[in-house]
Length: 80
Image 1 (cartoon, rainbow, N blue to C red):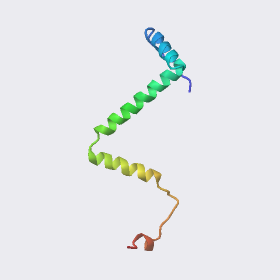
Image 2 (image 1 turned 90 degrees about the vertical axis):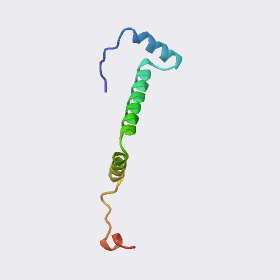
Image 3 (image 1 turned 135 degrees about the vertical axis):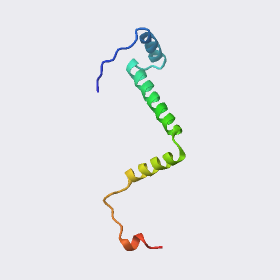
Image 4 (image 1 turned 180 degrees about the vertical axis):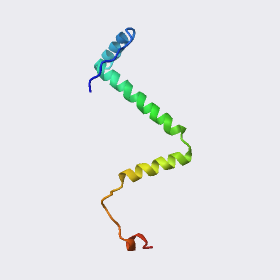
């Protein structure tokens, strides 16, 4: 996806310098910075959750991974 964004003129030389130091492109440096910021914010949100909320989120993630096409018989379900 291509988006045009306004970047402060003071930031451009800094981005170019970072790109040159990392032997990368300005675009790649910006993408890496954005990815890091998103990961950081997600971790902050997870750390701010209560234990119950974390358990609920874990259960939700497990349920999303479940195979909804597989079925289990009643006998197999209640077998000890």
